[in-house]
Image 1 (tube, one colour):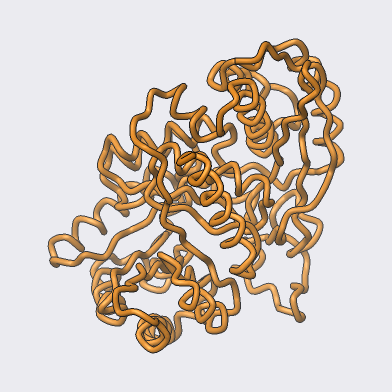
Image 2 (cartoon, one colour):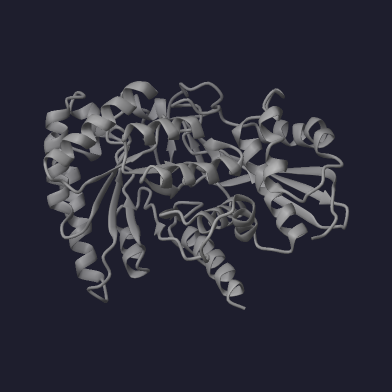
Length: 412
């Protein structure tokens, strides 16, 4: 192990791979104008309903000359569901180079867990939120892996005492608004789980849910038409942004019946439905999701419910897990801040028999995606999001190749 210390912190404002969208304004009918949205934003911090995502690369200079780095990023729908507001790149870069740099200078880089323990106290600094903690923790993990002369995945395993060889983690891709063309790409690339669907408007569900059912059935047929091998059986995973609950007026009986119809439409493939309802608070969300999951099991359904909104912190994820409120948790890494929280979230899911999905956002960067691949491999997560961006190919190549490189080096 090298004897390294942090000598300086440098930051550069950059861009994320997609956009920040004011979810509240979109839900209230903001009109589309090409790729943009018309009208004024409704969520504090937004300058427009849709605006380019920002990122800040944070770099830690080490005493031996190595520069470790990570990217501070936030999710596409920042500022809602208990999340931090949209970050300001220039202000965050200044904060990292001054107040944060003073706290980092001279710290040894022998232990990621010890370094990441410095992140939560930094939250007292004005402007230091989850995006800052997320990027700084990536740089910390990089620095410690360099000091240990090990991969980031093996560094996590060593510090948490995790057993088992590294393995490839199944990948989940999101189609964005190209709901047919990008599905074809996913099938040709034999993605493990697809298509997300971006079901973020009641118009995509249709009267009595007919449009959504047609789309689910189309995805199932398309897989069967395009797959080269019948052994390819992806999981069909749709994110409905709480809108099924809205359309069903938060009545669980018709919601259960509709999910059963979705399951029939997805056959012969397994169905996952993310954020089927939004109950308006964490406590209500947990209660309603647990009841919905129980009713599905009583109906002998194998539909898996995925929690996303209201599960933004390690403590909240633990509450969902303890209550049996989901079959899978999306561990939305930027929302959890420091990556040590994402590691702990996966382990908490495993202790409760809940599937752990290392998620995130299309608005992230290649750097944050590659570091997250190490978290997923180290903890043996059940799934990882192909990120960043909405083009499918780019995110898939970034996450797939980072895992492939790491696994190949692990064999030599």
